[in-house]
Image (tube, rainbow, N blue to C red; front, side, top):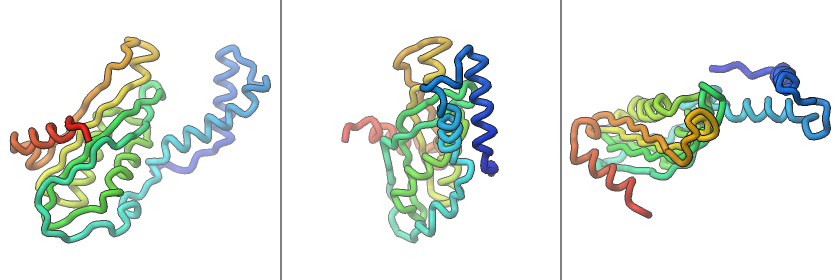
Length: 191
């Protein structure tokens, strides 16, 4: 768990950064920028403070359903831990229950918890899958994340509109090719 930041200390560092860039942090347009940036960074990394058990809030239910449950096109925003630039896109999350299901709204919230951290897409993908596996003990979990990385588009390679796709397949999605193919076909289907 990350401790609550000192917004004033963070703002002082942003002010120093603006000065180091040759800007005048006292000019009208930048006067409040250091505090805005500090507050935005705190909000964008609030996932460290999230208590997954409290977020799930007893939304685990016993149910005899044993077919795939898929929530697709979950929008997320995150920060690349290497450059502190945004990456954003869609996550597709599926599981096959084994006596337990989770409230559907909890799946996008789980994606958000892990997106609101300094991240790499690969880790975020695994974290979502592994947490569902731990909480539900399902037959299998599948997560596919498609994202655009501004660290790759705005600088460095300057490769525009080149999404990165990562996946984590656990249990039946890893072992059974037909199950994996059904999931991949469903996430490609237009709603």
